[in-house]
Image (tube, rainbow, N blue to C red):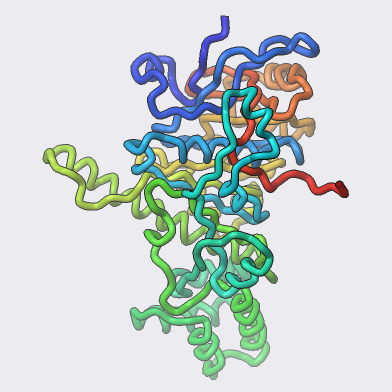
Length: 422
């Protein structure tokens, strides 16, 4: 007999907590081929931090599934929701649609005893200087996003621009950047440009190259002298979508800079908040410093934390993967190429949601994630999946089992479907 399952929660925890602080994500699949059918519900633990991999071939529904998880987080009772936040790094520009109900699948939702629902707790942030461009394109954005250049060191800029750390370009950039940082004040991109222009010891060639890179950075539209604070973005009960789909020029550089700053700040705030929470518990009082437990979600994650090489945000994401559980930071990485994700992220995953995969390298990557399962078992389960939308396998290190599931339909509208003529 197949019982209701809480993925990401041990049997002992399920016996103790039941379905407290869980999200309904789908139903078990029993049987194969024409005999396959849906049985009992599958839930997902939302109480504790997790490191999760969502993978599958293009068009299998990875972003759709992630939307289900975000919906369930935002549907938690207030006692849990008010202690939780979500940040989605969205390089493809599809999560704004969660604001609107999924009327196109109303009939399917009713078959699952669900109804269309839009989520007004989804807030979309767009690069500040491109904000009007987003509005003109009909993308519902809520807030402009600005960061002070002071938040980044010379190594960050070198990685963003693809410069060798020991090159003359990086050395000149670091010297001038440090001269501004030493003043202890905020500064703008124009201040960095002016400082380099006045550098008499740098060659004209080096200065011209650096000024060209900084001119490109101005076009990213995210920098201002003052910048924002992380608490302006990460708020209890809110899903903050960082939409960088319309950024021009050096696009992965700016995406990585944004991801690095937000990830670092979330981790720092949660480490401080966690210490205060423990002190308050021992002293029998309410915590004076609060910051919500945060889910960091990366679409196209192989570009943020690649298997080979480094990006500006690689180290920050690896820190979350290895050390985020204790302070209360969850990580979800979404990719169609799990073999391209950094090995240290894969090794820390306690949950894998895999839609259909056929690449040998990608299947091998799943085996690397969950070494307790032999590769043949993973392939067998994958081959037994019915050709249904949303059919997937779950590898659960908490339950130490692998099982098949069909994910439920989205309550909110999904803007990530494949374009067609009609």
